[in-house]
Length: 123
Image 1: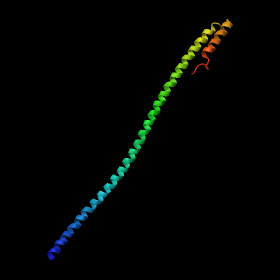
Image 2: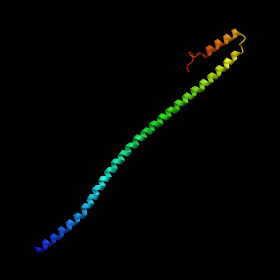
Image 3: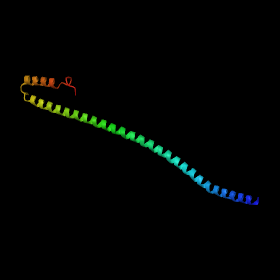
Image 4: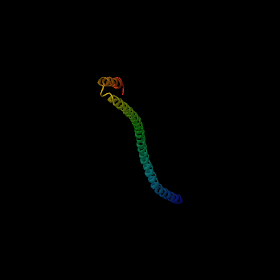
């Protein structure tokens, strides 16, 4: 009976020693799991932020594209208006040659008025 108790004591001692070795490792494992969870949460937050930033970038690109298209339209309008103004100036200069002939000058000015009447044109 003494031999069994001695063996039991040795086994009990070994079990306690193994538990002492296991406990710090379990604590390390728990700490690492907590750290991994925190990192997963942080990664998820970064992914959400990146997605939001990607959406903002895409939205900005679309606005920029729309602005470029609108600017092209406005430039074309300016170009067309400058060309119209140049034609008008040329026509006015042609009228000046009739400065001495008031009747012909009046006729040319009426023609100009009809030609350049803004109510007739959509600018």
